[in-house]
Length: 52
Image 1 (cartoon, one colour):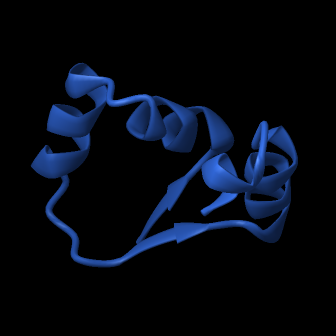
Image 2: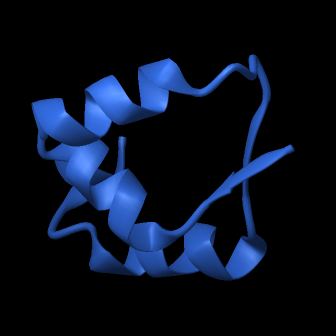
């Protein structure tokens, strides 16, 4: 099981290639985030376009 924290999601959203390559190295097809991480990510969205 792999669970991501907010910082990983933010870096993936920003297009950080180093983080993307590291995530691609993980041998799992299933990734999780906590409800707290989901809330942090949604609150951090600057506008409706970011939220989508």
